[in-house]
Image (cartoon, rainbow, N blue to C red; front, side, top):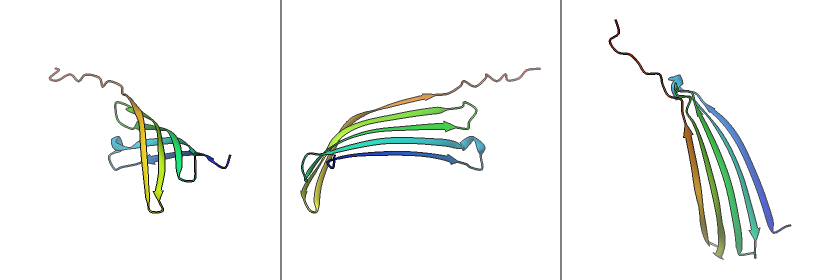
Amino acid sequence: TPRDTLTMLARGSAYAFTNEEQNYTDLLGSVRYSHAISSLTELTANVDFDYLKYNNPQNTETEFWKFLGGFIKKLTSQFTVRGNFGMALVNTKADTLPATTAGTH
């Protein structure tokens, strides 16, 4: 309906540095929903996902989820109040490095 808005975003990026172990890939996805209760008030909901893959010896990967709900209240033409509540979940995994042996003959 004209009072509802759904926005989706997807992005992928690769970052390269002189030290190749600092290189990483970033994948991001977002879904945002807004419902206008009136011309001055909106209810909002957001889900964001970010995936990071690092080019290091541990093959580190991080997943970041963010879930938010909130409101937007336009009090005057120049003053708007926004409020959000939610939670974030972060999961990082990495391979273990093999143990090094010092002083072998």
